[in-house]
Image 1: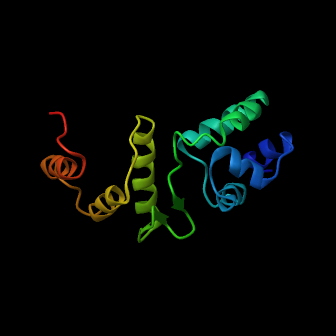
Image 2 (image 1 turned 90 degrees about the vertical axis):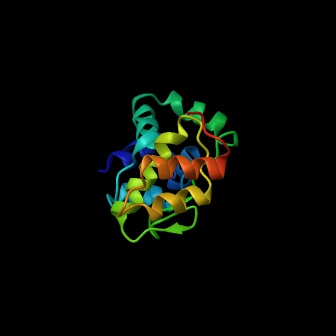
Length: 143
């Protein structure tokens, strides 16, 4: 049995309930359980903690409606992040991982950020181009 499904069954919760706890779509949970792709980043860590300690479920329940940190809008089936479409799963995952990892540092991406990253998949932006873009869209960056 898939590890995600096993954790969910041990907790006696539905796919919908797990999706709500982790702020992901039911389709994402189904994709994890169907082995179409694996959880990564924070969700992988939360699932690991849920699997190790059932008390984590109560803690996640407590904070599941807290909107201080908004989940990143994404659709792995359509390969979109904040409505920006990617031509393949590799590009989608590369940008998703980069953005999600930076969100742990307080970064709140805008659609224009995703568009910038998508435009530079095949030809990465230079440091100067990135700094100029950040200054233009976020004010003056610390140097």
